[in-house]
Amino acid sequence: MAIVEVRDLYKSFSRGTERIEVLMDLNLDVQEGEFVALMGPSGSGKTTLLNLIAGLDGPTDGTITIGGQEISSLSESELARWRTRNVGFVFQFYNLLPVLSAYENVELPLLLLPMSKAERRAQVENALEIVSLSDRMNHRPGQLSGGQCQRVGIARAIVTDPTIIVADEPTGALDSKSADAALDLLNLLRSELGKTIMMVTHDPTAAKCAQRIVHLEKGRLVGQDTITASALSPLEVSR
Picture 1 (cartoon, helix red, strand yellow):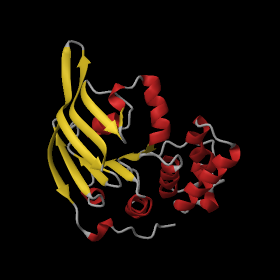
Picture 2: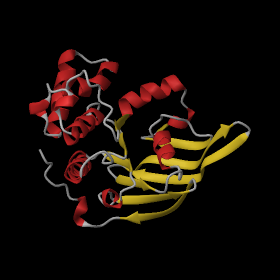
Picture 3: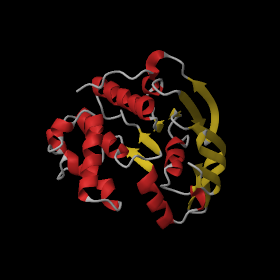
Picture 4: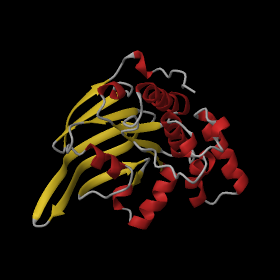
C-alpha cells in the first residue's frame, strides 16, 4: 500500500519578476515500509521534494497524500500539528541543542504532545535503546562523537513513532565508519520496525542501501532503480 502519494506536483518560486520552476509534473508513490533514496545534481529539486513531503512547504499545484491525509490542503498551523505526529527528521548536521543532554534532545518532540512525564521517559529510553545509546543518555552533544550525535538525531526522529522518516544527507558530515553505522541503523528501522524512509543523498554508496533510487533532474523524475542487493539486510550497529 502506498503511504506517500504525490500527484501532478509543481513547485515554483518568484525571484523579482522571474518565476523559477523547481518541480514540474512529478508523480511518485512510496510504499509503506519502503526505503527510498532521492538523487540528482544540485538544483534538481530533490530537497524541495523532501521538504514538501515532510510538510515543511506547500506545492504550487498538485497534491501530496501521506497515510491517507492530503497534506497539500492543510493550513500552516494544521501542517505544524501534523508534522509533530507524523514526520521524523534526520539532518546532515544533527541539529542537536548543545546545552541539552542526549535524553533531553530526544525528548523535545514529545513536549509538543499531550503526554505525562512517565510516558515521555518510556518512549525516550526506548528510542535511545534502539540506537544503542542508553549508556550515553546524560551526555551532551559536545561529549559525543559525530556518529553518536547522528544516532541521537535518529532516536529523536523515531521517538514519536512517526508515519515517515525523512533524512537529508544523513551521512554527509560523517566519516565512512560512522556513515555505515547510520545507514545500517536506518535499514534496521525499516526491516525491524517497518518504518518508511525517504533520504536525499549525493553519495551513490549511501543510496545503494535503499530499496529504490529515484533520480531527479531539472525538477522532473527521470528514472528509478530498484536495489536487490544484500545491502538491504541490517548489519550490527557500531557502538
